[in-house]
Structure formats: structure tokens, C-alpha cells
Amino acid sequence: MIELTRLNGAPITLNSDLIKTAEASPDTMLTLINGEKLIVRETCAVVSERVIEYRARLLAAVARRAPTY
Image 1 (cartoon, rainbow, N blue to C red):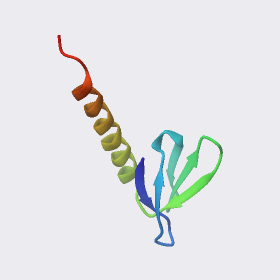
Image 2: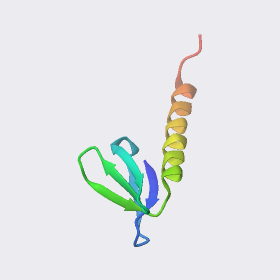
Image 3: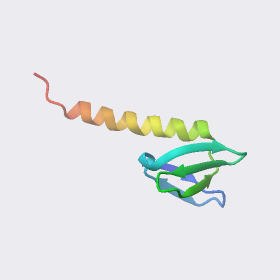
Image 4: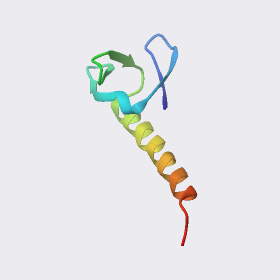
């Protein structure tokens, strides 16, 4: 889950697996896999970075739990 900000300033926590596309037009519009569209304050680059950081944290957590032989 990543934290973003709607245009009205309200925070939103989004399951990043639901993001299909991110477009800057000039606001950042996220299209979700169900067709819903969200406009957020963050740039496309920031959204991408948050998704990458979130997935890196998940992979690191899995690696810590993996048995070592």
C-alpha cells in the first residue's frame, strides 16, 4: 500500500497492484485495473518511486524470513 494525496488534500492509501497507468496531464491521473480514475497531487515519478520502495520493502521482508541452509 502506498500513501498519496488527492487534489483536495485528503490522504489516500492505495493498493499499488491496482494501478494500471499513471499519466501527467498536467495533474497526475491514475487509472486502476477496474477502470476507476484517481487524480493525485504527486507526480508520476513520485508515484513510481513509492511503488518501487513499497515492493522493495516487501521483498526484503520475504528475504529475511527465507530459511538459510
